[in-house]
Length: 238
Image (cartoon, rainbow, N blue to C red):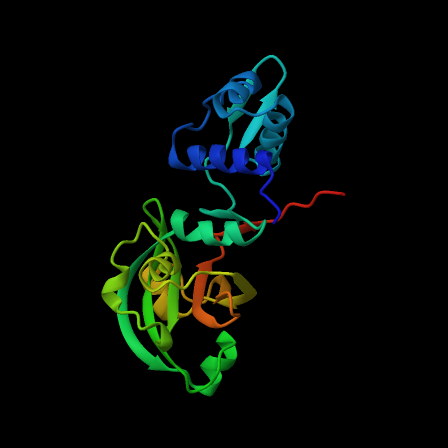
């Protein structure tokens, strides 16, 4: 599967440091040479990463004066690379889910259509808020197929993804993921949970997790306010 380019990963690391306040407004970033040594990357990779941040308006590079931070507000609070299945699974580690409500549900025709599942099937439903650091970035609802036999108490450890808990306890692992991304308006309930504004633009991602037998066993439905999340896509000519 395609791997995230190293310059994108380095740009993400530096961006997080800027947003977190490690490099404050007006502060200088390490030189390209220092970045190479610190992150074990080539000069070309370091230069490309800095170019990404400059294009985003976070830094300014001036000959003889170095690279300084000119904005601490990145386009989104959390930016996720889209390179393959591993990148999608990594999201759950970097944006941890704090589960607030658990219940059992039977999918109505409309909900089944939205989620891409069979109507009338029963699922364990987990609802909560995802956080990147201290900031709430998304409201998430996760559905776990009744056939798994999972219990709400299986998912108390937020340092692991729901799918990791299922793999460890029930022996069902992720072999494939499909993802649907759509633009919506943030509903009042999600806005209240996220301390956001109801009706603002939002990005909704619905992910369907399949096992090795191509059986759908987990669905995640995540709603991000538009100013708190972005996807990064990179392409390479071959």
